[in-house]
Length: 221
Image (cartoon, rainbow, N blue to C red; front, side, top):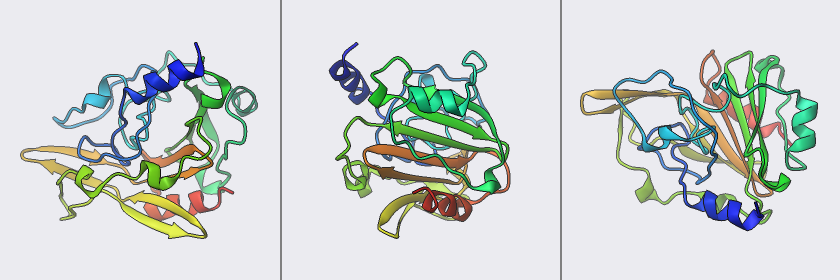
């Protein structure tokens, strides 16, 4: 399959949520891997049907790392098959990798990414766009795309933009969103872009918070 066909297919799908919820639209990104059913409370997102690693949907329960039909591989193999130049977090607080997978496997190499589940419960995804010139601003959603939503702690926004050392980050605090009588748990997450690759780090379980994840992201150079 040509790179052009892959890009056309990718543009037809839209990723949701930096910290996954139908109400949080962020960098648009896709995969086609099957998903597994995870924890949720009466809330279903359209992206749950076939979201791969959640398409920059940080916190979407059910992704390629959860799928038992997708075997893990070594980091050495992942680096050899994925796009060149992908940054991998090295912080000791993450613990050892539990499972490593490729995203968009079968696509041209410049579009193949890496997903890693760590002992700490943190998930990491690096998803190349194929466009080295893609910027943070290209993917940043408009204010209107942050659909009004209420967190149980009173927040109205799902994420903030933080700039540090010449790089911008989307930072989402963990919590619980309320949609009428329905609720949805949202993990803390951080997302950023480097040379056209979208990076997502989120704590699906464990004790790490958004500030911990932001520190990890800043160290990735």
